[in-house]
Length: 342
Figure (cartoon, rainbow, N blue to C red):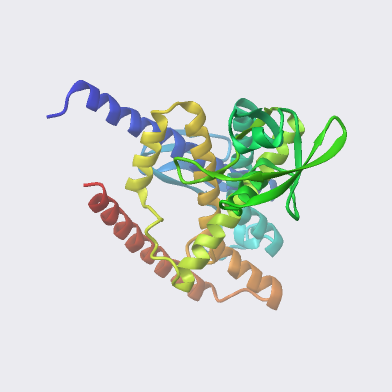
């Protein structure tokens, strides 16, 4: 039987998901909307959510609405799904203009992630390749390393970040290696041997210096965005090649659970997760699959390359088939999530 604490926990998870996913959808659709307006496309409706309207406001040209189910959103543009000679229609615009409108949604998701990373690293700081603390009786202390030493090389690998420090130390299991650092402007070299931590990692007993300088924060934010994009691309590549079972991908139920659990740890971890989800949403929408932004971009690129539009009826048929396939995939993921969470 559900008690008050369980009900509050469920409510918190639900509200957290609605806020996080609502933000991602709003930013995505806002990108489409702003670029459409910039290119002179008439927008009938800007909607967050799907299903029945629960709130709407009639602007000068556009209806702004909130809908019942917080599972998506849309920007309804004139001439989006049919040919129109009206100068305010999407279909009457040049290919590069239509491309920019379609690409703006995913781009805004990447931009949101970057801004969140900047906020995140401004709060928690960025670990750098300068030693912040040396643990007593560990190899680093025995080798003579001190707080303030800037590590610049491990064996033949040049070091510019804390991630590179940990990655290169991990390569030297139970082996000694040369470590080059700068202390008070002088370059020095020591030999260090790794130890195995309780978590199964190779360590030498140092902790990084944490900095919050704007330049370092922005650089780290761009690097994290780039790393996440490469990781997601690699995961999808392995799935296509058959090197992955796809178990690492979750559906709506799984995302709700992840967001809910993360929200229990506070706003900062939830912000970090929001950035990761935003990158995923932007990436998925750029996949060259019918009904997604990426699928529509393919047809615009076809027109730009071959100097003629793709057959409108065939394109709409492909989008319809793609939409049905996406629904089937969604049902499969939801079913699998429910089974996994039993």
